[in-house]
Length: 68
Image 1 (cartoon, rainbow, N blue to C red):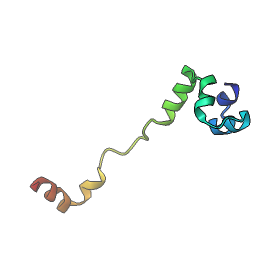
Image 2: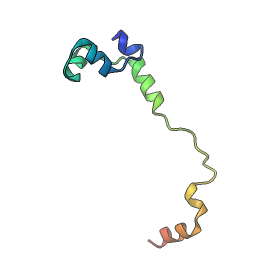
Image 3: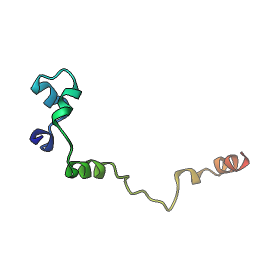
Image 4: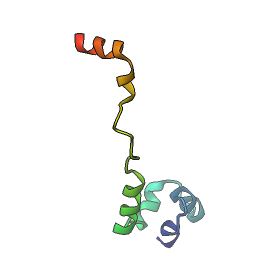
């Protein structure tokens, strides 16, 4: 667990322990709340400029979409 917390990839830990399957390694490793929070923080979307949508530049595209 200490290796996982310090950022070592689980596949590296698996190989170091001599496990054939990640399922075997996962038996002894559980992610704690701190690690879950870090993972979720990496998944947050980047802020975008919402003042103008990229598709709003193309009036023909908007007209086509309205005709559907």
